Length: 261
Image (cartoon, rainbow, N blue to C red; front, side, top):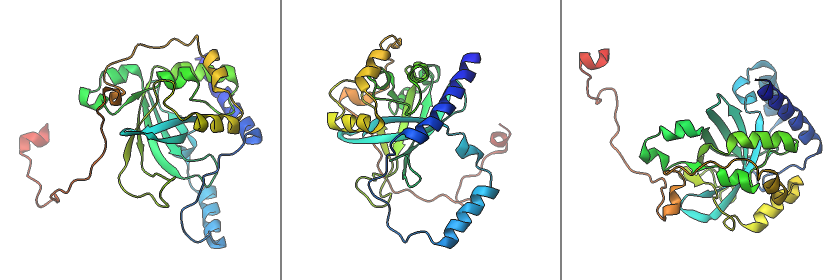
């Protein structure tokens, strides 16, 4: 318990320090539209002062890593995760293409413990990826967090599994077009574009190799069959299909005994 409280305090302190000294990651472009008027800005200020933002404030852990489209490893994306840990077994993250106020929301990730992953149906497991390599390689970082606290955080992530949906290819489209896309994470050296990793590390002033050495003693869990399904050479992605619309008048009536159940 004391360790968890200490980690939370260090993470909060690290976030304050990071805000003061870290370079921002601005999105490369903004969506089309007229600039916000003074009236809109006043409405935003009023909402910020008067309304509850409890769910948003809970996303207090910042992680930076990389994803690729499940059916195309060449389409690689830096992902700025803002995460809320709801239990020791479940974390939810919103994903942006930067870390500034104008950053674009491009996806979501759900993170579960190994215990919960083992209980998933086999078909469901194919949508999830492991975090072993992301942690051990130093690709996944917690910007601004002191290295000892970051290492403790990574010991909690290394055995988890994530399911990621990106809703916007903001590097290509001005607006969120098309279908959500299933994303995956890297599992070996040589998969992530080296220049992309180097640019990210330079921007944050970190060394992936230094973090790799620091995390060498983190125990690496055994690979569980089902995750990282793309490694089989076959993968999953979303398609759109047309269906008949069901309304209350066309939905089959349930028998009384079914309602009671």
